Amino acid sequence: MSRLRDALARGEFMITGEVAPPLGTDMAAMREAVATLGPHCHALNVTDNQGATLHLSSLAASRTVLDMGFEPIFQQTCRDRNRLALQSDLLAAWTLGLENLLVVTGDDPRSGDHPEAKGVFDIDSTQLLAIAHGMNEGRDMLGREMTGGTGFFLGAAAFPEAEPWDVQRERALRKVEAGAEFFQTQAVFDIDKFARAAEDLRPSGVKLIAGVLLLKSPRVVKFINERLAGLMVPEYLGARIEAASDPLAESIALATEQVRALREVADGVHIMPLGVDGAVAEILAGAGLT
Amino acid sequence: MIITKPRDWDRILANMAEVDARRVFIMGCGQCATVARTGGEDEIAEARRRLAAADIEVTGWAVGEVACHSGGTRLETRRHSGSIEEADAVLVLSCGAGVQTVADATSKPVFPGLESVFLGNVVRHGVFEERCQMCGECVLDLTAGICPVTTCPKGLLNGPCGGMWDGNCEVVTDRECTHVLIRRRLAEQAREGTGVLAPKDHSKQLKPGSVNLRGERGKGRR
Image 1: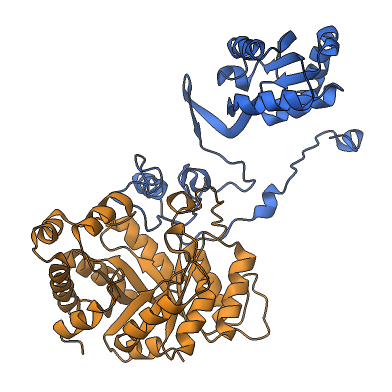
Image 2: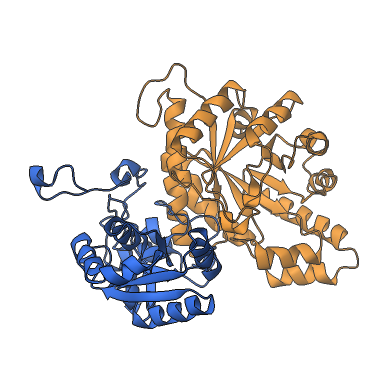
């Protein structure tokens, strides 16, 4: 059984982290990240060709996380596979012992390292949730009984700060309708907007794990604002990092404040330390979560 | 109409070299490629200059009514049979459908002079936008007359994706998100959203498409 599902059901405050599989076959760096983050997190997301850039598959890397004694959240994007491949990989994931699934649309190939690639998007993330939900009940997307189903804890992405919120809310509720049991959100900078999302979405029963991104340098702030889709760092926070004598220390302090505030409104936090994995323990301790 | 764009001339000249073409006949299209300003008389004049600069003689040229119409194109090639006969190759300034129609109508090697890019709306003179992908299973009844299959860069039926910001698309950043537009128009018309839209049936657009309104008489001919 998914420990993530059990702990959320018990009302525990969840902590999730994130690791990226390598470009190549040497898993040493990823294993190191898993070993650093794993002990502080209930589960670790394993990204799937994130940013539309080539990496080893989340399927194999998620299994590595599991073999190391930690709980993976297997990510699947709709960008790289059609409905046959997606279903096939979901079945494979379950047989490999991967119990948590996060379904996302996926960045457009034009923003990645293979801009000439065909974006598949045969199925969108809402539809894939419905398919996985059916598989949990032992059926494929055609409704056929399969020899053995899955039992995924189904997650999706939510975007509490992207306006217009009514459109986002509608989309999020459709994802719940399709089978999403938990959301991991885009990085949260405005707690009020997160609270608005929580108020709108929680009555559906879905759990909300809020994204916390370590703004470790002015360069990262600039990168997010100029290059990353669906996210903007508010000016006052950018200025705070810019003005700091030690931007990394300031970003850890900021993330700590954010986690502390989110404890009041979220069911958990998803920490994205952008490679500064060692900072996670400090952030959690500072927020009173250890 | 079918929107075409100019093709890389280096590639066209390389095609000519492949068949040692020293003399070429040029065929345009009086319909879409003329409107798109890629295969009308002006563009044929430009192609003649390009070919002349590469020491290739143009034996003749024609802009038929519609290049993709088999009957019309056969007539056109017959009308110009002399200059086509003198040529080593035919260069066609039309969409790929027209190129193939010409290739079927002559025994000479036929080469494309344009790239075919999309089925376009004429937004205004000289401005074309893709609004329909001819998917064979129209969803416009559910999406307030705005096609997400075509105008969402990811073709998502259930959007927006996580890249939308301030109502704008993440890929074509100066455009409003299709899913925001759909939702707004549905609201303006006091129509309910449709819930989760099911995956598309891609078997509705299996290639190659074929329609035959002539029953048995047309069988065996495509």
